[in-house]
Image (tube, rainbow, N blue to C red):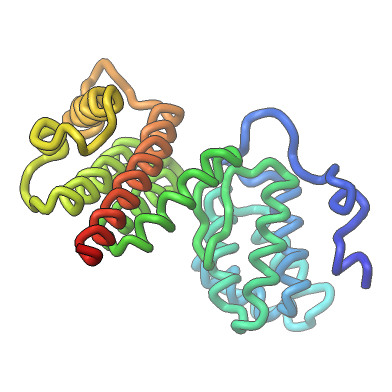
Length: 274
């Protein structure tokens, strides 16, 4: 009982999380595959229902000669999970979550995210969807930015930020230019909402409204807009966008969107109090 409530020794005393080194994003090590199977079993899935999920995800026929749960069907599932391409392991995680009854989903999600943290996996399971996991600062900044933008009623900007995260999370390769484009589109939408103008580009809005961002941050935002336009929208054969650059842009934009959203809320409060 204590094991389930508080975690094992390593987790109770803070030794479990992966420490140091680059997060794993383009692989599914054996320890992750084993942990996935254990998490599914702990969520209440017997071998046959789990085989349905795995075979359906991998689009393979279940072995009709295997009918006994233990050890035949379980062994078949283990062979499939350990033998598939790395990116399909994450597909299986999403499919397993989707197939669980509602009261089992949260526990499975917690188990998977704990597994990711312990094994140094650069992904996280959020409401049944595998999304990119950066360092704690990046995750906190982006999550807070999305929450503030959503609370401000900026539905389009919120959706663009979500699309940016999805592009960073694409498997087997992230869409880095797409992430930057969606991030800048989110900031442009937020700036349009604050200014009350629906058509100008972000670059034009910065020129028209010098108080949109505090100085000299407005100059930095204008340069960021130019950088994103050159690197992501138009692209250059001699210049390949890196993961670190795309993550940097998405993180900075999340902060800027948060700032603009809060500025809009203050404007609305001022209008209502006038």
